[in-house]
Length: 232
Ligand SMILES: NC(=O)c1ccc[n+]([C@@H]2O[C@H](COP(=O)([O-])OP(=O)(O)OC[C@H]3O[C@@H](n4cnc5c(N)ncnc54)[C@H](OP(=O)(O)O)[C@@H]3O)[C@@H](O)[C@H]2O)c1
Image: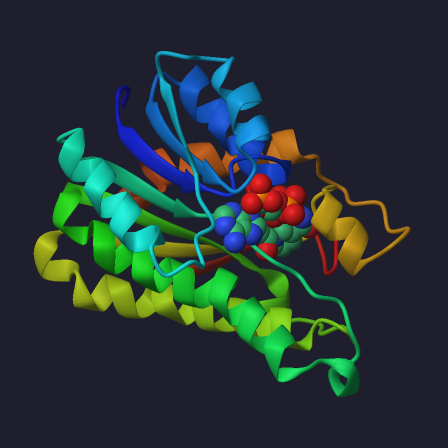
């Protein structure tokens, strides 16, 4: 199972940082994306030969071209794509502006759509697209005030994983979404100040890294809750 090439967004901190460390510990090659170049450089120190970093805002108009050119220039193929980068704006529904809603959608939904479409020509047969969604966007879960735009964006991301599984079945590409419960990160503090999550970023990062590499042998087109309760 070693030596796959995996692209991970949101690799600079929180859960993504730990997914990255876990993937390189398993022996895989990683392309790590986030806006903070400084934090990505710190990540690269763990395994300089296995980690390539791309400091990129995934919502900018030229990010797709940057990615495409990077793959062409380095003659790369991909085995897994993990949409982990996320934004959470915590505001009562009546205070959320159209701009807040757009920002949520741009990071949590439109960027995964664009990145997936851009990188599809570079996928190996049998690749896995894994979307990191949220229990907030899981049908029938408890919902929380302030998280309307975030939860809606994650619900849409989950459905994207279902439709991709159908669209890409003839290319033997699998797609799943993991809907996470609470994990102790900066985002969790924003969403639920004072709440103590039952899982650390390392625990969740290890689980997601393994699922990204192996989960599509068992699941395709699935929206899977990964939670000990909601929010935690
Ligand atoms: N923590 C939880 O309890 C929880 C629960 C359910 C779901 N999730 C989901 O799990 C994922 C990781 O969450 P987390 O808690 O680890 O969040 P986090 O600590 O806030 O990290 C978010 C990551 O996304 C990157 N990012 C944000 N906007 C970006 C942009 N425009 N372009 C490129 N990268 C961007 C950030 O890097 P830069 O700032 O350097 O760009 C950072 O690496 C998210 O999708 C989140 O919705 C988390």
